[in-house]
Image 1 (cartoon, one colour):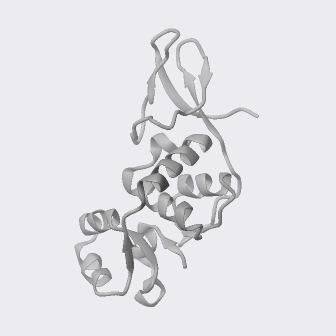
Image 2 (cartoon, rainbow, N blue to C red):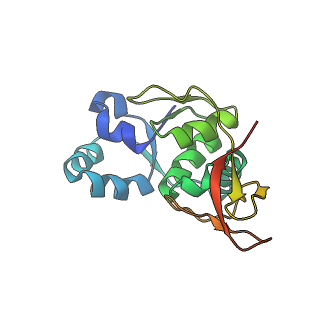
Length: 164
């Protein structure tokens, strides 16, 4: 039993993908990125699942603990939720997913790149007053830029690697 991220669906041969576990939400992402590959993937025996809502909550909490949550998409959260809920290894090239899995003590494997060598923890740091806080589990996803405004001074809070 193994959970496959979209990278595996895009780049692995069909024989490696068959019988993998994937989120239903990945189908839309795959069709958008590669319509031809989407048609091939849909002809294979893949265990398409919708993650249990409690698994999604757990995935959001784990990703918030590592600080990766603001930079994970809803599809990423679904894939992470399946891996956590099923206690199955996750095959992904996404370093943020690898980081969240490793921080949770769960197994992860790269698809086509070298795996993450270190586990990093992220925090929110104010660009104005410099105050820091952990990443909350209810933060919205965005690819870049500020995550939220500082409660102390109102300046944007950015996602930064936590200092050791």
